[in-house]
Length: 250
Image (cartoon, rainbow, N blue to C red):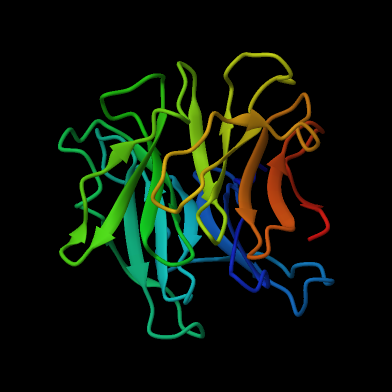
């Protein structure tokens, strides 16, 4: 069984992830708990939006009513970003449709790993679209009165390697992402990197390693709590893929 990286609700009581728990293709799952001190309950598939293809990268908006995810459900094309909605947090997500304003005109391009900022002001994702610095780069699009603006890449974050899973803090001043780039201090596989900016619409600084959580396996950050004190991540340095949380003082 392989698990994807974790995304959480703002209260950290609902966990969203992708996995091939039943074997075969990846599906979307959620699990809930009563408090942050509790373990999560049994994963439940998001049946109404799962397909017979690989459905991955679930991300739920701050109000809990919109689900973003990626899927390769269209034969002969790359993976694309889809969106589904629900009327209340007690209902199931339904009506998955292509996020057409985000995906590139070239259907073989893959847009994956969507992340919606806490204020719903930006949509971040990774993509194989051009122009590119590496095999996959980090892109973002801003919401305007007319919808999503044209996506742009962030050259400060990208490298000639694979860069993905952008995860922003609630104030949008810090971004975590994963990369298999080389350099001093890397530990092998995918490592977690971090970058900062002074304003929510400014440019990010040069990224640095989050050395205290990286291992010789693949480490992928998927969620940072609203107070930036808990980082949820995926690691596969053991014989199984596991989800961890790293904590720090305010």
